[in-house]
Length: 279
Length: 156
Image (cartoon, rainbow over all chains, first blue to last red; front, side, top):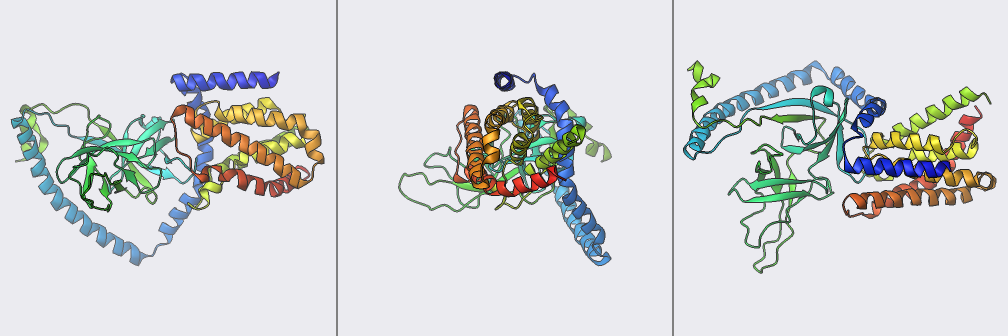
């Protein structure tokens, strides 16, 4: 009798959860308890990180500081160029009567070292709806796209990596703008490119960047590099794979991005950007 | 045995099992991580069936669903079915030698993993590799140790 009640209750829950978002408040409430468990499990690892950074000697810190300073200098000069390029791009797009998206806000989140389900590529970060995180937000790291927010809970969020077999991301080849879709392979550090025509102009070593189509991901972020594949003359399509740029299994910090959905109008605001006022 | 005292013990062991369930492991070991919560729950349902019932299993299952980010009801359904089987046969199971118990645990874990596979397929058809079934074997191998450990905790 009790079993019957349990079975009926479970199936009711399953169906409601598949069909709607109505159970989200319940999940959010219960997640307060489970999230404290997640943080507890993560504690030894983060403590170890903290202690080891405390213990790192003055010498290594100094070395790290100099190298970071140099890196910053290089980045800054590159950004100067980037600024000019962005302006040029906006002008050119204005000529083409095209709108331009710019300005993205980011939030730094830290991964919790816990392991949910072995064969799924889902990670947990320590920022949730209390920080305004919402589902479908793109997640990046310093090297490229990591994935997207899959479910946002009050104190943590689940992130689906681009290598998850259920994930697909619209990309383009940086060299020639060829558009395609990169699908997760289920293997860490591998993406599949199944939707390429026979005569596609794609070579090993090509950089794949987000195309911004579909609206999920902002355009222009690196996704991966095309792996070696055998070049054949006959019409068979080789199985083309790519390696993600982001270090999916090594990074502890990721960036959650808010894309500004407001499109930049064609020409007028050019004179109003802060950089112009300085001149 | 003092009632609230044992309830406390059940609670703490289950919390600990949930921590083990999400424990970070190296890539080679991660697919072997068994369903600790179910194993601990099976032990308690065999040891004190008058205190641990289907209702407990169901609520715990819902909690594990939230913990693992599953759809609501998956673990709840699995746990209540497995615990129901344990409650029916607990008298015989308690008489069994450990090897035979392990065989029963194997069947329970196989059943739960099969249901998981089915839930996965309802959502979207997925490819499953051999490693999907590894937690069944690791759980079966670990059962005698869990049994001894839990028994010493119970008699503490």
